[in-house]
Each structure stands twice: as structure tokens, then as C-alpha cells.
Image 1 (cartoon, rainbow, N blue to C red):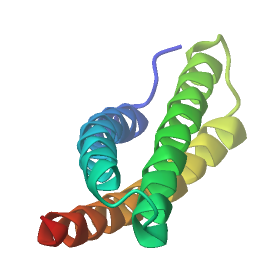
Image 2: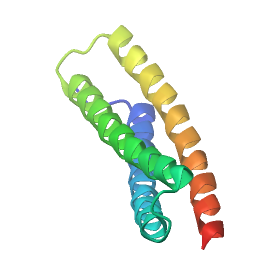
Image 3: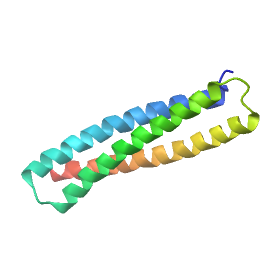
Length: 115
């Protein structure tokens, strides 16, 4: 069964946002690591590094959730209720992803100001 276009668009948007978050997270980790090499015992920098590591895990689990949902919706004869629930879950996930994206941007800005 083809995935409804609204959900397919949501999946595409999630994939793009997760890709961007992954890039930003890698940049943030690299920046935090460089700063930690200069300020080795700085607790705040250690927290930033841990935050970016946690976001990397969030991206991985979010990708798995999107993949699982896509597989479920690609099956034959998917009930409408399952499609509706999948759309709602993906919509909530997009909200969390966008919130993380904003927080990563703010955190990277703080790190940039340390340099």
C-alpha cells in the first residue's frame, strides 16, 4: 500500500531535519572537543559535550522510529487507525525535532562565543 502523501511529506521533512541536526551536532561536538582541549576541567564544556552526544543518540532513535513507521505503513492493507496514529506520532516527533534543532543552534552559538 502506498504511504499517504501527507505522511510521505512528513517523513521527508523529518529526514531532512534529522540530517541537519546530525550535521550541527557533529560541528558542536568538534567545537566542544577543541575547547575542552584548551580548558580541560571546565564543567560547562563537559556538559555541552554530553548534550551533543545525547542529541546524536536522539537522532539515531528518531531515524529508527521513522524507519519502523515507514515499514509499517508500507505493508498491505494497513487499517486507517494505524495510518492516523502513525501520522500523529510523526507529527509529535517533528515537534521534538524542531525543538532540538533550535536548542542546538543556541548551544553552538554559546560555544562560538567562547572562542
